[in-house]
Image 1 (cartoon, rainbow, N blue to C red):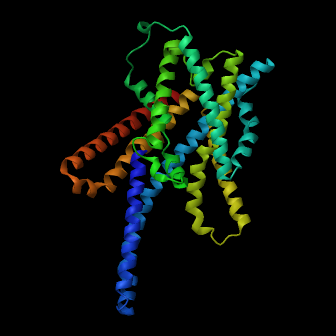
Image 2: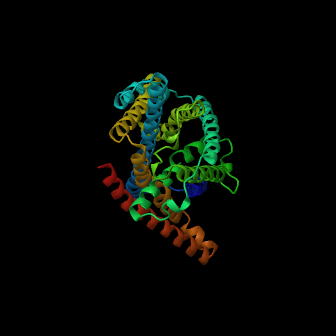
Image 3: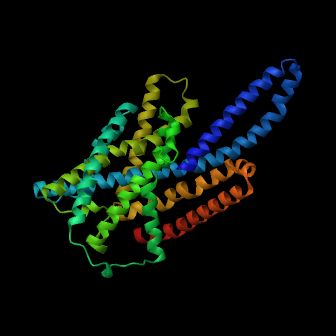
Length: 379
């Protein structure tokens, strides 16, 4: 994530530099003949710009497809999480056994209502509400896990196989994947410079999330062992306190769906913006809603086809998540900062290049092994 933001800042600086220089060149060449300008515009520029445009378009499509796949996958995870917890809550409160497949369709209208929210201010308040729920729930879970009877450490597996490690890598990557929302949120920030840095938004968020996941995962494993489920809340009892935790996390996930949908809507809207500039406001609004509902349909379909959190989370993380967290950021940083590193020092250039190559190799390794492992698990 830090690599993406740094690349974004550098490219913006280069864009502004070239824009200012081009303006200076235009003003300094006011005495040149119209014939020379026409020859330049009609011969050399189109050929270069067309070839560059085609190359950039191909790279952009690859990254955008991974981003779309990642966000749709995350949305499907959120959908499954809500369905699982709604089923547990309703089954307990009304002593029934709802059909899980039917529940996918029952909660669909609520997601349609949620995805219809367009105001960024309303989105931010919904996200804030979800954060309040998740912090409260995590505190309760951690306190409970600390005082639960724990399994002997000698009875737990300390080493795993390459197959299981690849699946775990997908889950870990999924936990930290936020590439799809970092740049869109940064563009909306009043002070974008606060996104990076030692105490920046990204560093603080990653440290906080890492601490919570490591603590919860460790306590959950020594408490439930191999019986731990796709979500730690599914291992909780139905006591009033545990039930309140499930309700809070279910509401948090429901609210968070809106944030995870936001990058998809922004990306597609930006792509089609040149084609609908002259359309009337009603048509633009209709297209925006269509994009939202198509994303919901895709995430619903994926959730319905793979309705298991322990299978879909590693699958999303090890495919698009691995490409966007290790492979693409390392490639982009190497290309964007190639000249900058060379100008500073050879050792800095060598260090960053080798480090990015290691990231890329790791990403491709886990992509291949993880995809195979998850395919075997799903099939």
